Length: 289
Image (tube, rainbow, N blue to C red; front, side):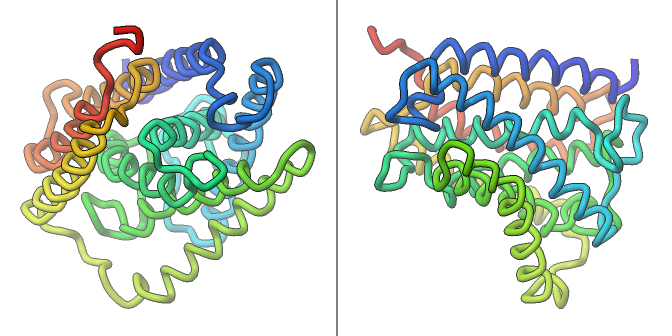
């Protein structure tokens, strides 16, 4: 069985687990629609999933066509133009899961919703782990160098769409939420162009040495660990139901890292620190305990 088949099957299991836990706990009632009933919250959550997936497909497909920075060159089972359908289906999990974590840790707006900037930062943190491993496993490839063959703007792009889409979820209600399909991709393009022509076009385009990459991951993970530890002291923790799908997804990518014993030590050293903060942030005891 090749790595791509493993990713596709495992992703379906993770997505099913996430959806089941989300609907069972009424996630949308606390994150997406605080004022609604559990039934309306579940309906809104399903609508959000559809909008986030469609918006992500549009953002990615137009990025590939306009900028030619990356491509899905592996034999994915089903494509919609230039983007695998499964990738679009995964995107709602990425964003809604980050919104759950930010909500649990108190990173919220005045209205009580997960803060879009915090969501963007959380997704960039996740992307910094996923991108180098996925590229090495051959799931997709970039035409620009950078962090283990991943340009830095490619990692930031995850956060641009996640933050913009999250802001749309918070700003619009009812049928107006359809605006996400246009506004989130447009905001993603605007931020990509601003950061590219405002900085990355002129520097930070060379491959990062392995030692520097490891030092960067250790420093970043240590910073998140310290912050999460302080939040834990004031009882701001993420429940196990929220973390289970995220841990399954992380396990999938760490499994790809060690696929058939072909791991590369610099990438292993880079990836390992990413797990620490979430173990600190997770609530190990039930609310009743």
